[in-house]
Each structure stands twice: as structure tokens, then as C-alpha cells.
Image (cartoon, rainbow, N blue to C red; front, side):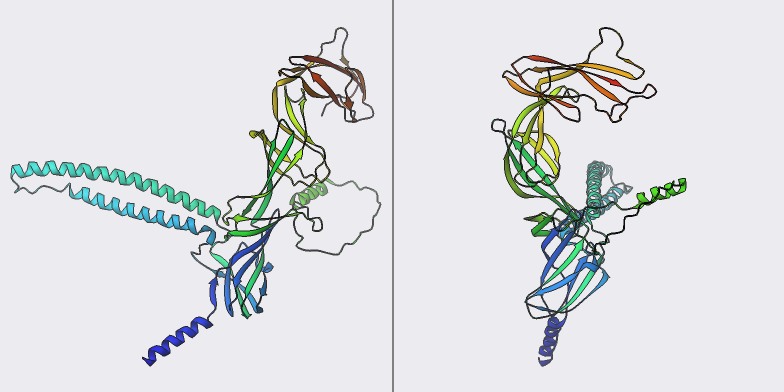
Length: 490
């Protein structure tokens, strides 16, 4: 009895003094950037503990801190964990095991059925009486037919199970983080209770903004619903606070230093130098806009699977009053557009894809560029098929409209309001602008005169059209240029 008590005491002592091997740490928070994330993991503190992290986290970025506990030492090493299943993929792995077991069962049943069918084909003993032989043949025929039917049904079920197993294994392969059977083991010694926190960087994360915009046709109010689309493939599920940053953090900093500005004569480059320069530029990595002082971040809460599945997390809902209008641009399309213009944004908008709705009905998609507070935002919410505009080139009545060093063009614009109510239509067209001093452009006719004309040659007419009314406008211009040159429009 005493030996048993002594043995149990030794086992209990070993349990308390051995490190908590392979302890799982839960993700507490994540600071997510356009590409990458700083992730903070948390676990209860033990005097000696080990935490295994997927290699999706960079080992040299690990930082360990404690709350209500003192960190005595930290060391890391790379280990192999054959068959290690990441928490984020546990459900998928369970489905694979069940499907593989079903494949094994069907294969075994198929072999058994084949053996049964073989026995049913054995020769009949010659000593049997004729009446016994007839009964045996009838019964045997039915059993052989049943066996063949079961063999075919089993083969179809086996084929289906194998296809499902292959699909699940491919899905698992696509969702695994880098080097899935290796890990970074973090060995930590602490003093006192509390919790330890591990902060680590991963490149296996990203996020972007997505909007849903609904225009109220009667009031002109544009309602924005903003979402964050977060994706990460670290092998660990995130479920908690996410801080979404708009710019990349700098991984290294150097003190700014202004180089001298030197004026020199341009030296003609040899062809080989030019090729070398192009190769150098091609090999240079794409620069990412990095900034920290002007970072805009969003704080949200939500669950992000660690297998690379996209997670759409609600961020905010807000609205802007907008001026709506019908815009016709015959150079682009016959049908007019319904537009909404927000004069002054009261908050910055991040760039992102937007789903457009008109009075709750889908009308299209667009991309919103980054916009600052106070800027104007113009949006098109779809076509207005009953308002049309066409452009036709006029045929000259006499003489020629072109020749060496001369080009003259005339166009007729026709805009029609096919709606049953008076409609304000903004019609846009253009005249060319010169990119060279030797190209002269003379506007011969604009009838009627446009409401506005900017320095880019864009013409704007604000028209009020009655139901069924068609309005015609004329644009005519002349280009003169050196006779030995050719004109292109771009």
C-alpha cells in the first residue's frame, strides 16, 4: 500500500513540474494591414510552458510579455509535428477521416461481394438428384443476381466516396499554411500566475473595404453600408477584436538624410546599359505606400477563419445627401446614366468595391477611390434607357473638309426624353485640345452654346426636356497642322 502511495505521489509531482508541452494559445487581438498582421496570442501562465505556433508566424518577430506574471526566460526552436492538425482545420480533417473510413468500408464490402459471387459459380456436386438440382439452380440464380446488383451499387457508392475524399483532401491542401508539419516551439519560464501574451507577425493576412450603396430615388439620400473583407491563413481562428489599418507598418527605419543635388550633362547610354537598367527596374520589388503618422484604423469584432476563407465583418452604416441627375454622353453610350453627386464628404472614405442599389434593387457595381473629408464623390447608379442621346457626323454641303494640313469636322447631337415627365438632362461632349504648338484648333460652331466648357475641351449642356421632346445640337471645329505630319486623337 505504501509503495502504491509513493508511486502516485511521484506521478503527481511529475505532472506539476513537467512543462505544459504543446499548449494551445488563443488569439486575443490582431492588427491587420493591407498585407500582413501583428497577432497577439494569450495563454494561462505556467512555471514552465511550451506553445507551438504554425510557421505562418515569423519566428524572429516573436515578443513575449506577461500580465500578473514575470517572464524569466524565452527560447524558440523549430520542430516537426507530423500529422499536426491546426485548430482552424479540425472540422475539415474530421470530415476527411470519416470519408476515408467510408472508402475503406466500401472497399472491404466490395471484396466480400466479389468472393460471394465467386462461390456462387462453383460446380454442382454430381451426386445431386435432378429435383434438388433444379431448386438449387433457381435459388442460385436469384442469389447471383442479387450479388451482382449489390456489387454494382457498392461500386457506385465507392466511386462517389473516393471523389468526395479527393475533393476534401484538395480543399485541405489549399487551406494549409506554409510547411504545415513544422512549427515554432516557444519555451517560456514564468514566475507567478496570470497570463502570457505572444505577439508575432504574419504575412498570411490581408483586408480590404467593401461597400453597399443604396440611393433613394425620391430623396437623393445615399446610404452606405461598410464592411471589412478579412482573409488570413495562419492555421488559427481569430475571434475577437480586430484593428484594421490602412497603411503598412515600416519593418525598418533609418534617419532621414538629404543628398546633394548635382547638375551634370546627360551622357548617352549604350544599348547594353539600357538593357541592364530595364532588367534592374524589372527586378525591383513593387513599392508599397508606407506611413504610420497618418494611419487610419478601424476597430471591429468578428470571427475570421484561419483557413483562408473570406470573412465579411460589418464596420459602419452612414448616409450622405446627394444631388441626383440624368447624364447623357453619346460618345460613350446611347443610353443616359442616373448619377448622384455628394458635394462634401463629412468623413474619409477608403477605397473599395461597392455594390450599387436603387431603391433597394441591384443596379450594378463600381469602385470607390480613396476620398478625403470635404471632397466631392460622383457615382453612377445605372442606366436610364428612356433618355437617349446619339451623335452623328455631318456631311459637308460643298467643298472638302480635309486635306494636307487641314481637318474640319461637324457633328449633330440628338437627345430625347422618352419619359412621361419633364426631365433635366446634362449632356456632355468634347472638342479636341492641342498637345503641340503646331496644332491649331478653331471651334467654328457650338449651337446652342454650352452651359460650361473647361480647359480640357469638355462641353456641358444643362437641358430641360419635356416628355417626348428631342433636342438637336451642333458642334463644329477645324484643325490646322504641318502638312508633313499626321494627326491622331487619343
